Length: 378
Image (tube, rainbow, N blue to C red; front, side):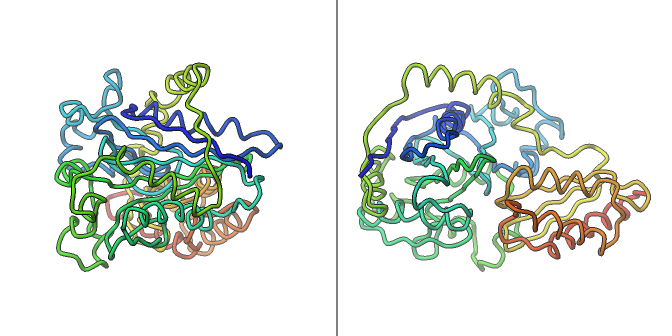
């Protein structure tokens, strides 16, 4: 049995945590399969991390957005909007899809990196989430917590979310599986920072957002920190996947490489704020779908789409979204034309928006275009 690599570290910055996960992926580009790596770590309290395809401004609480008047913040002080600077909270963007999370010393971050060429490794996001969630479930079971995987990307205990999952597969078939496990959580802080649309939780028929969440500490009835349970989660992966780990911390050379990736990518506004709409995208739509919450922004020129931005907490490939946005540019605002483009793009090999049909996406785009006209667009 080949030993998987195991890395443990604590209180990392948002940029170092995310850069470290991506840096590990570079080692799996070779056609020669190698055993996966599991990293269990905590972030420095606190940071807001948006999903790969989300719009930062849309995910912030509107009152927080008002603090900087709708303008993007000055990034010289560490990628923080003014309200978050006061609190010492950083903002960043991860590679994996899914929704916005608040991370810190009370949440255990997990990153599993491998290649789809490695034996028994799934290649579709739905299968990846289900397979590697087993390690988390087994780890929680070892603590005495009976949890289950709930599609599309949650782990729940008694109907309450205790962990969120995310995944990303690059063009070389290298995959990253993310988990944020709530060992404890400052819910008032989270709600003060994030914009939680009613559409996202209304079908759960709950009185408050707090009723949708639970933590390891709450379930066990005692205060715990991530280091208290990390070994349980590690053993959970070993038991669930039939593997064993070999501890191999980041080397000095790897830390140097991670620092370089931080500077080049995760400490730049081009990465963090890349899904920000342009001022002329006055047409918007917000739609809850099987794939997640979908936000569309559209600019029109007469009866054609001048530009479009597709954002949300769905799972997809970057190339899929970029190509769809490019192909829809200067397309007529006609159901048949839009749907034809989407069917063609989403049927190509390796293309997907998990759980989203061309028909549903077409409806959201048409709603955004209609909204643009209502707001005085051409």
